[in-house]
Length: 163
Image 1: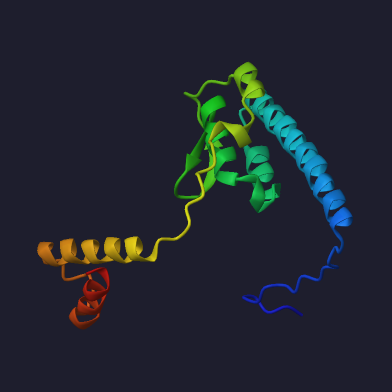
Image 2: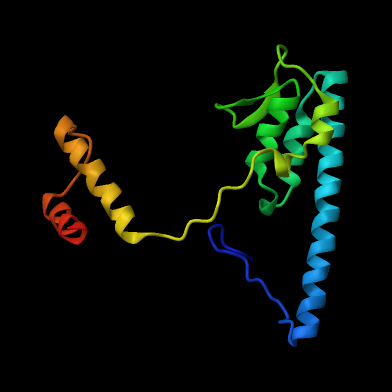
C-alpha cells in the first residue's frame, strides 16, 4: 500500500533507436492533438450545458479530469471568459455567474490551450533570484516589519554574493 506523501513508482520501457523515437514522437503529436480536440469539444459542450441548466459541476469535473499538462488554469480562465461561470476563491471551484455571458461561437474559435499563451521559458538566473530576495529583505527591514524573520548574518552573506 502506498503511503500518502510518497510518489508512485512509474515504470517505463525506454524507447531505443532513433527510428523508434521518431515514431514515438509522431504518436505523441497525433495523440496530443486528438486530446486537445476532445477536451475543447467537451469544454464547449459544458458551456452550452451551463447556459441551458445554470449548473457548473461538469466544468469542475472536466478541470479535475484533464491531465496536468493540459494547463488547468488556462481552462479556468477560458470558462470565465466565455461562460456564465466564475472562480470561487473560497472553495477553489468554478461556480455559476448569473451576470456572465455565454459566447459559444467565440469559445469554439478560441480553444483554451491557445486562449492564454504559455509563458516563454526562462532558464533560472541564480544571481537575479538572489538579488530579488536581497531587495525584498531590504524593503521589509526598511518598513520595520517584525513579522518578517530576516537573519542579518544570512542576509549579509547574500549581499556579498550579489556584490
